[in-house]
Length: 170
Image (cartoon, rainbow, N blue to C red; front, side, top):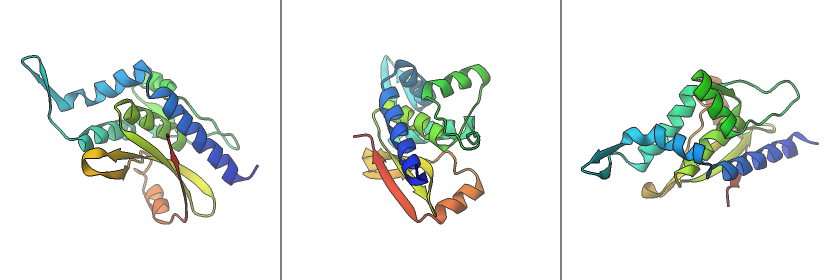
């Protein structure tokens, strides 16, 4: 199997995980808990204090700051479910996963709040990285929300991308 077909298989698996877990009650409650500080309650009414962009950024920053990048074992591709990462977070206060794991988690959290999510599979010589993008309706545009991009090497890599394929939730 070529690396391109393996990478596309991984991207398809990540999309399926996002689709399957976006309606999971634990995922929905977790995303609401993360974004709950963006709302104010007065006299029994809920008031939105911030924009959709702030809501998406809160979820992005949560994954960015709480999930540490760890590569898969050599010559193995393992994809953790969003629920497994949430269990790690609840038990240890942090979780570990590579780009596909973090994309599945962040994608499911965003989609659980009703946001459109798509995944970008990218690479230089071959496909080697996946990250989510979210559509912000009030701004009518897609935003990159790559939780792995905290590393300067990854930012360097993203600037040199020559291959790109988009995967939609449909």
